[in-house]
Structures are given as C-alpha cells and as structure tokens.
Length: 232
Image 1 (cartoon, helix red, strand yellow):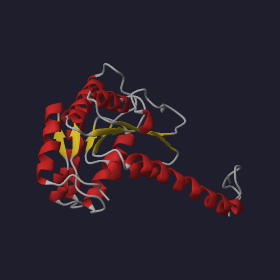
Image 2 (cartoon, rainbow, N blue to C red; image 1 turned 90 degrees about the vertical axis):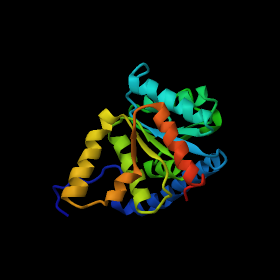
Image 3 (cartoon, rainbow, N blue to C red; image 1 turned 60 degrees about the horizontal axis):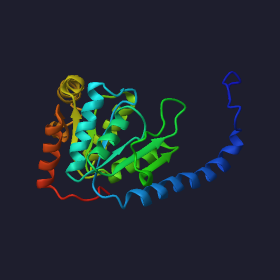
C-alpha cells in the first residue's frame, strides 16, 4: 500500500475481524429490542422531516395537525424521536390520544429524544440501517414533511422498497407542493422521460398533499382498497 495513504490510528486492520464479530451481537440486540417493542403497537404511520424546524413554523404546526388527525383515526405515529418535525409528529400523536413512538438515533449533533414520546415506545439506535428496518417493517404509511438529506434518504429508501416489491405498497405522501413539486418534476422529466430509468407507474407510488384533510383522506381511501397488515 502507498505509504502516503493515511491509516486509521484507532484500530489495526488485523483487529477488524474480531471487532466485527462482536459488533454482530450489538446489531442483533438492536433488532431484537426493536421487534419486541414495536410488534405489539399495531398500525402506525411514520412521519419524516427536518430536525431543524422550530415550534411555531408552519411546517411544525402542520405536522402536529396531520399527526393528530391520523391518531384520531386509530393510527400510532412513529417518528425519528428527535426535535423539529419529529417532535411535532409525536406531539400530534399525543394530542390525538394515539400511540407515540420515537426511534432515536445517536448522533454527534442535533439529536435528542423529544418529550412527547410514550415511555414504553422510546427506542435508541446506534445503526441507521437497523432503525430503517423498524420504520419500514412497522409503518402502514409514510408522511414526508419538508426536510434535508436524511428525509430524502428515507423517502428514496421507502419508494425503492415498494418499487422493487421488498415491501407492500402503502400510502407515501409528500406534504407541501411548493417543497416537493420540483423534485417530482425532475423525476418525471429526467428520470422518466429523458433517461427512461424509471417506469410511469413508479410515480403512481407517491402522492402530494397540502392539508391534514388531504393526507388523512388518502390514507383512509387507500385502506378501503387494501388490507391493513404488517409489511414483511
């Protein structure tokens, strides 16, 4: 190996196998804890969005109302457990007397559990991929509020799993036409029409909405045509 390439000072390559073997047990423990906690909750909707959105911001208050209305219809609400849109989702769940679930991730910045999560449904994760499995396995719908890279990652994860048949089709709702229309137009014009990298029906997997009423109506209408069941 070129001597100019900087090597890790934290762990020698010879130590990697032993470390990875022990890491497997930590990963398994996160899966077991998540499965045991979430399997008993029932139908839920996951709400994604920015951790940076403050109380009083229109996106925050809209999230509260959407989550409240969904909770009143009998759905638990799952969020990433942190501040911003995640906090708003959990707050709305409690206002609607629904189950309020937080799947928190340990980060070096901006992430701490919000105060609106039910005590028996507040889970902490070290691994993003384990946390993603919990979202996709136990959610019967996804509400995407405006957010950053993490929200985009979650959106494309979900739509890819549905498109490839790795999970059942569920409502996938982008809230805020002014925020999401540019992305959807790019997918239509570039990914579909120009490059033919997706199929026309792939865009039917998502819906844009602007109000709590539109979100709830789409979820309820979807489940008049599809059974409400675990994803995988």
